[in-house]
Image (cartoon, rainbow, N blue to C red; front, side, top):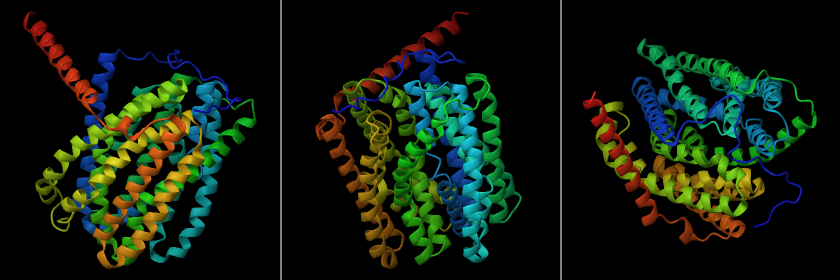
Length: 458
């Protein structure tokens, strides 16, 4: 594997970070489990509330507004990757990175919002789908930078708490509005306010961990992180378009109700991928800071676990959806369980891509490789969707997404193999991964037995 000669030596992955003490391994494992349960519950409830109380058409508007928030952070959101590089390479102090992030979020967010507002006037009576999210752009960017700082510090607990806040607070904002009978537009505007609250509230503990934000003394910081973030933003834009091209096609060819139905299927898969995202988070810092060989081995191992966990989740989710979707969402969503069945392969590929992307972003620092990976999938997805969506509707979109996902995973794996010398055999789950979960189950059983015995003896 090649390594850049001018790259500063990464900070040691076990170096103590200021402001917090990492939990013990058992405590950290229990925390991760509790965090995932809360996040899954909140995300599921958000899907149920928006799907059932808004109906397919209203859910479609919500999905388009959510897509807008994603698009708004594409140009400058990836600056957080540059911040992670600054942290792991030890170039600037954490307070300076914190202060610089606030500047970029404020100035860049306002400029992005102005561009979005100008575009919104071309949408007619749907102008608010772009204009309303544009008003919270600085806070969306700040949320991204805050999470990036915690990830760069290796503070997994804080990242987990922030992600829980992102799952719980939007639900707490939109659910009362929907239960009160608010129209879709009003409920969505109230939902957007939750992002302002999250960004402002997160600034308090972040300041406690890293100190008072200061402007960077090295003015080249802004150029470095914006330039590197710009390289990643191209990749993120490709991935975002690839993930949502189906929604846009359905909005054009089939209307809001079709968008709403397909968005529910996508949301179901995202719930399924929550555990895999947590797995990728737990190895994020080590993949970026360990030696190239150790990082490649860890990435391959994480891919194996991601595939195994997602496959196991599919075996539960898809059969359960045939019963749960009609009960939870009501009429109009009858196609969702079969859509999930069509999309299962795409879910497995997406799960495997998380650690592969981490490797190329923060270890190999080769965003151009990821642009090639995502670009190939986007071209295939656009071509297939354009051909299939007008005739097959949501089924054509689902087939296009699965075929494009197959291509994307293939190109990503070939690129990883060329960079790290890893073969397909190295990412196929086997007995060692199953043994890991058998060992984990036995450990938890022994621990619970000891706890019960100790409580009984008191």
